[in-house]
Image 1 (cartoon, helix red, strand yellow):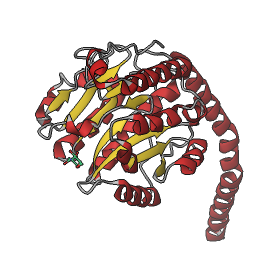
Image 2 (image 1 turned 45 degrees about the horizontal axis):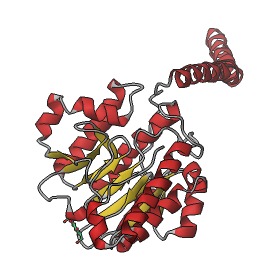
Image 3 (image 1 turned 180 degrees about the vertical axis):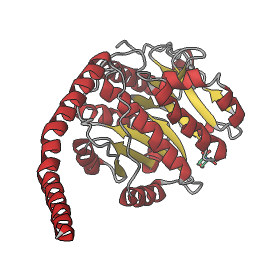
Length: 332
Ligand SMILES: *[C@@H]1O[C@H](CO)[C@@H](O)[C@H](O)[C@H]1NC(C)=O
């Protein structure tokens, strides 16, 4: 009898526990999850207003994305495993920036062939679809939960995520053994930069003005040092919340961790790798023109159009006039 009573007691406890589990778990979900989500959205909202970075995990490439990237890099690469990478979003397509970018390769001095080595890195689906209409090498770079199709306000949360996504992606490309020139789409190419980029540096990077690095145009060789550099760079995201990758880069250059990497870095003179912040006067040698210091898509497009016109005007001059031509690049 006593034994039976005990068993009955045990059974009652078990049944109660089971019922509690069946009823209780949904209750926990019903009350806790919306509350948690609500809190998260308040935090996200708060953070995006502050323009800080919520440090959401940036996803690794999936197995298939990795395969697809490998295939594209191989297809677009020069024989020595070098590619040109250019990011693209829908807003830049709509504004006509990518057309201007490609036009500069046609208008430049013998650089049309380089277009075959460009991989466009689309950061939203619409940009990807547009890319496939105009270019053979398009890669879709996904970032879960963020819509990168609109124009990103400088230093907004999405803007920051976009810049950090880029660093992680470039690290992946280096790990796959490819050297690259990373070039933003708001850069016009006039001449072949490879002839000016020397072999004995790991990283060669453009500048806004003297000694101020600009990450819009970077040439990176794939080796152990540069892979470590990009890992380190990405790692600074946690320490520098709300800071974009370019400022993080400048900050980290002074750090022991970067010195230990033993990286050979060269900043590229603005007379050759030029931008609106510090416009080149040297039409005979200038290689690229970047819409730096122009804020917003409208300003950037205005400047790029007038700079490309200035270049065309220069090209049309007879040789003796070219020598003395003073550039008038226009303004933002
Ligand atoms: C790869 O080849 C191109 C074209 O010949 C050359 O300009 C460039 O410097 C080479 N890059 C490397 C890393 O050897």
